[in-house]
Image (tube, rainbow, N blue to C red; front, side):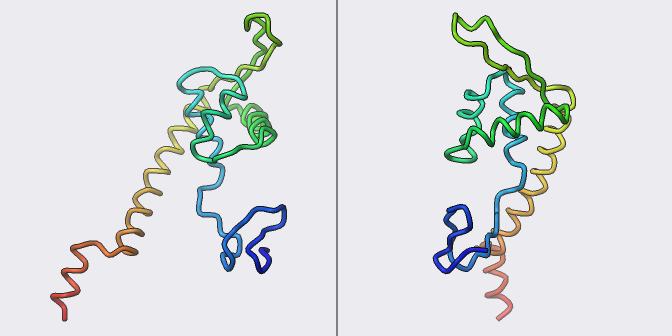
Length: 138
């Protein structure tokens, strides 16, 4: 529960009075990672750079925990790359068929979510057609 200054436990700043409402879809990181992996295999820190567009600064621990869960759930797989130019071995991730199916399902769900958000904002801002109709009703 946020305190009077809008602080949530853990130091995350939220506007006062929002009661911790999260407006971003839950589990957003999983499809963003899968989208990156659909383009090419990648290692964790590169995925973190690619996934940052939807999150701002990201905690590496969060990314690697998510990757481990995704691998456990069969959405991606990894192997050690020992051929990276004399540097240390690093884990390289790739999308699986199940991950590709999950991403397609997520995209379809987001299409519906986008239609709902578009309808919300048309109502919130008042579309021109609606304003004209309200004038005619007077």
